[in-house]
Image 1 (cartoon, rainbow, N blue to C red):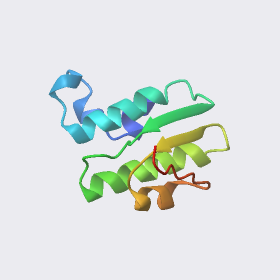
Image 2 (tube, rainbow, N blue to C red):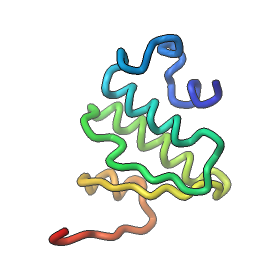
Image 3 (cartoon, rainbow, N blue to C red):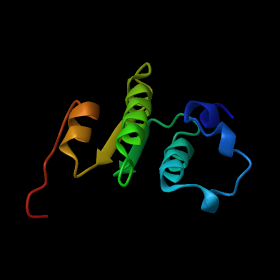
Image 4 (cartoon, rainbow, N blue to C red):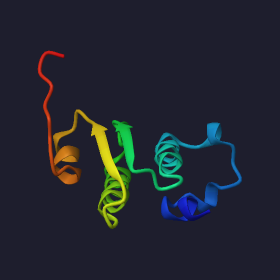
Length: 97
């Protein structure tokens, strides 16, 4: 229940996942990835298709998770340089891949 609250999904807690909006599905996927406080989480474009406010919310959550007492390292792929700048301490750029 902690992740449901942390990711602002409480009002959707009793709905099947297929009925959620894309924004809430993304939040749910990241919440599921964080269950058990894993040492490494790999996210593939976690905020793709979200509106600006939803992206900012997701970025804040991911930032909080990755800086929380150094428990979790977050590796993410993105096409959005704003997202990389907001979330990353190290960046690798793939060219021609």
